[in-house]
Image (cartoon, rainbow, N blue to C red; front, side, top):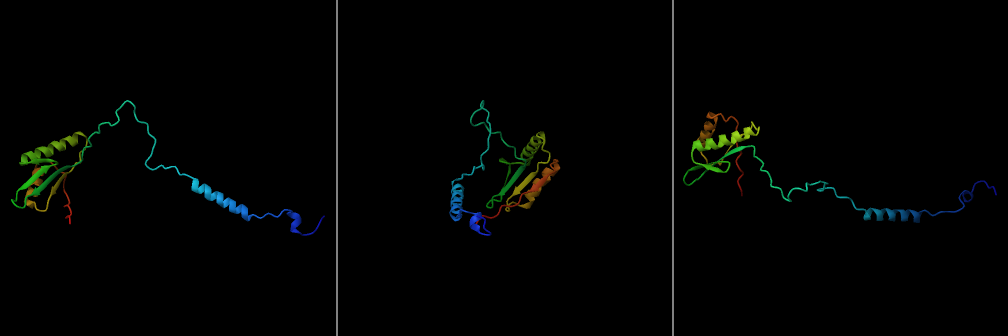
Length: 153
């Protein structure tokens, strides 16, 4: 019974592991293909109030700038000025709208709101300087010049 060296006595049953490795790989591939990842992008849990409507009214977001838009009709040479979306015809009206907008922002606690001068290239520089002088004389200190729009081709 006792023999000195044979592998057959230490391992009486010879096992072929190649088919078992094949089955393990097949099971791994099956589980990898059938696994579904949970999609987290764009979804999050939230609890909405039930005592409100489906679509609440949005509150207007105040812009933090006062924009003076200046355009020039190349045919007549007439300069048109607007403060935000209001067309103005005189310096007093321009100044009144700009100061009113500035005081609204200051009431909201926004003290560093700029007045942006947005003039097209056809506007004469003397008109732009005139608006800048008008604002400077009335204590509107923070003024900026808007970059010109690129030409559309």
